[in-house]
Length: 419
Image (cartoon, rainbow, N blue to C red; front, side, top):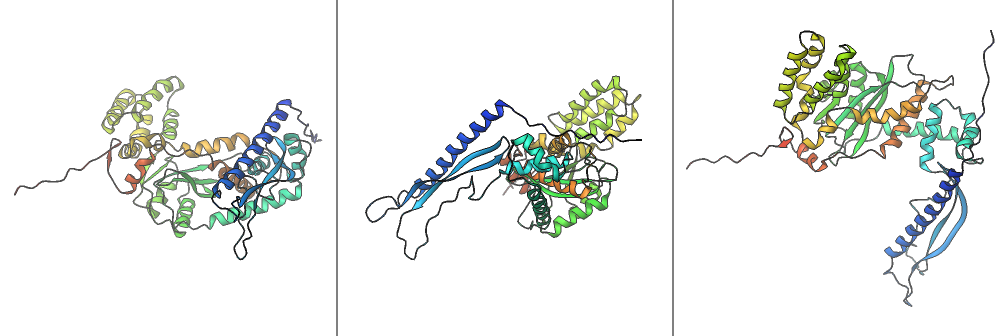
């Protein structure tokens, strides 16, 4: 029985809009490079030569070169700055562009594109042809040899990241989840264990990332012990995740003071799976009334109403809700500005939704180990665009241990004693 081995080559994409975008990118980049050089010159405007002339001045441009970008090769020239002073024993003042490093030939956004293509099953030997279709006919800086070197660099980046010192870090909240992908990983029990943290400044960061078993407390214990041994001594105030994770048992052992908040998105799905489809719309609206309540008392009342309404016919759905009542309502003891962030593990889900969308089943040679490395690079690229927490001014109060009730800071009045 013969197998279909037909290979459909990439077709060069001829798109006038891409040409317009490329020309617009070239003009914009040229303007930004000049503005950057002018800002550097302005910084030293008070530095003069003995004859009164400016010591730091613009000095033309460097040779033209092509930078590979998401819209193809863009021709640019680096703006140059000159120090005209006779400095003697003093050091020359040198200008280095932060936007366009001296030897750069490829934008960082393109580095993020490469693991995407790898996850989609494009082998290293096909990169040149595939990228030519995406970026233009000439991609001289993206040969198979360059791709091999990049993957080695990604491995080194991952190894260094896993050994980084965390002694200066603190995370007020953490979100945990085990994420399965279709990158040739679904045939075994392993998944990506992901831990994202919020700093006291409101910035979200990737804290932990490794392969393991989602439901295994041991896998999560290894991840948490590792980050603690690398200096993360201060326990997070609150952890958010799905109830099915082995994470909860592990964090009770490693960071026993951390409070638990169950994800309402996962809980809602679990409850609705226990009832007929015809009931799900109304039940989902009733669940929304619970986690959208303005106070804990109102939420508890809504839970009682839910139990009375559905208990007789859908007792399993009611039990699924009520058994985790305390961990579902923990967010009420934290600032109201943070509730949208704390009621769900979406900070992880939203990141991996893009990865899942770009990941398809193929018959390439991508191993689970390589998939982990590629996804790590994708998440790091996505991290640069993560939104900060709303109400970041409230985070220092949480760190200080200030109490919140129904999202509002509790002001303790001083006690007065009679003489």
